[in-house]
Length: 253
Length: 283
Ligand SMILES: Nc1ncnc2c1ncn2[C@@H]1O[C@H](COP(=O)(O)OP(=O)(O)OP(=O)(O)O)[C@@H](O)[C@H]1O
Ligand SMILES: [Mg+2]
Image 1: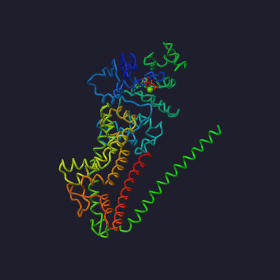
Image 2: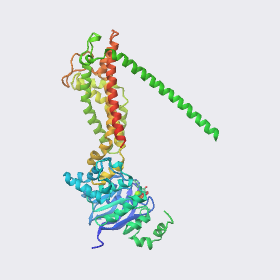
Image 3: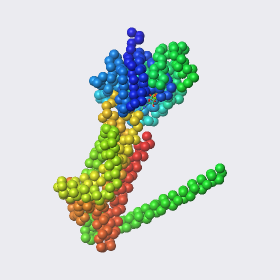
Image 4: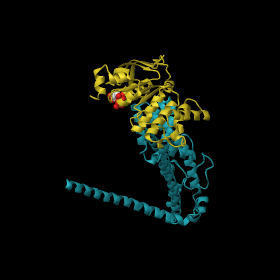
């Protein structure tokens, strides 16, 4: 039971028009674990993350070959409901991107578009999500003020709360701490540790220390390929591939 | 090095002075015009001016017909332009396929904004008044003015939509929102202040327009207010135009009073636009 797969990525190739950004990626993401993706800039980490909730559909000329199974079912079939897929697989972006609305409305946005209209229920979801993102205590007295008045770190946690509000099963995070200072980063990392109990998390990070600190498994990407994917301590202490070793010891990248 | 720096600073100073001269020139002319209008306009301006119809005698002439005509025409034009303009911009920016045809349409709309207003008056006369048999009505006038400002409204709404960052659209999609939700709940609210600002400025342009309405056949001497959208009408700028062309010199003062009213209306609208922009840009 402990190593249940939530995502199975099978021989995925990905193209932006003629440019191949991902090459034959195969990996399993385990349930209730934190999976970190590391690799030099431009190696395809964000592209890979976006294939999982089909955000790449929005990019013109983008094309995918291979398949991704979520809970054992393909997400790239004709009849897949992308709206429902994105509801079940949430995403937090590199730059905090709150809506220019109130804190409350930001978190309530997801539930509202998915049909929750009851005020009390919405309120409960908002409070619960803000608590889940460790932001509630800081904003509980000003839920009606604009989200843009929050600090960068608070905005990012708000974005996490917003993603949690639709009750996803998987949370994709694309360098969620890259725009934050060390204190705010530490908060986000603590949060990831806590969220792991209820969510499966895939996190892209530029910081190897961060990958080592927060993740159970780590995948190393290089020029569109998944070079190595293993338990985090294995990757950092005893990598199988020379290129992984070069990267984590800082010899390139 | 030092020489170069000195030279640069000198050029800097010269241009500063040149620009200052031009700006003050503009401001002086503007101030003189406003002073002229206000000082002459105040002479005949009283409450009666708003409640009286036009007359052959300057001291009995009032703006009531023009004021009501303007309110009717602009009041009818506002919803037409706002919905058609915003909807068109939304379609072009958010829905239309990105291809040559869309680009061509966008280009042409931008070009339409540069066409002289009298051409729109001829179009209104041909299409609304004659072909569609609306006569010289408030409706025909409102539609003509709508055509006139729509290009401007559409282009400014397009700019407003384009300035909404894609990161907000992505945030919405990533939460499982569909296209329409994203546009309606995220993109539109973010763009609305800019859309409104551009819209109000376009409306204030329409309020001052004379040529296209004269062209399409709005009346000049009117002794009634329109009761419905099919009635004939006149507007403030046409009345002003008419008064200035009359032989009696006192009509110049009446015309100035009308201009003053028009000026105040425009100030109010521009103030409103500035207020909206200021209020939302602070966030
Ligand atoms: N929308 C796009 N259209 C075309 N090419 C793209 C697009 N997005 C990314 N690419 C290309 O795909 C490759 C992988 O980009 P991606 O953003 O996935 O890298 P990354 O690993 O996330 O980099 P970083 O660490 O800098 O965020 C790059 O070569 C990039 O130029
Ligand atoms: Mg990236």
